[in-house]
Length: 169
Image (tube, rainbow, N blue to C red; front, side, top):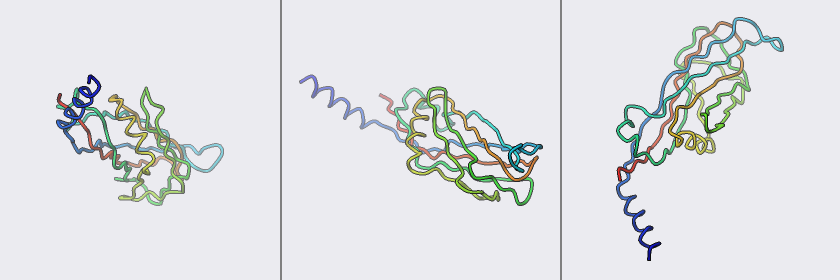
């Protein structure tokens, strides 16, 4: 009887779930080194930013959030201050936090950097992103790799399209 009672309460509690669709977004600037890498004629990139999990849409639900469901994660080129810039295959984006080693997303090919071009994480990666967001702590995005030109700035917009489940009870 006690088990049935607890199960019923959980079902009823679910009726009061609130779903909030939002985008956790911002900009990441990649600046290539001025000096060529020793092993190639490319120029290194190594940038890290910290991202807050909560945005203006979520502050009112901060203590009531039960889970995050990412539906899309995209990196889009906003600007590049040189022409014919190419991010080299193997350039990586690491998304992680202090409690979760996260996920490394590798650029699988030489990627011509042009305004409007974008990279999107695959479906399998979204489960790891959900785990990172569920920790409810700031996370980092680190970009490491190389490009074909030195002293170049590439501005990317990152966007995490998520549905947040909150329960006020």
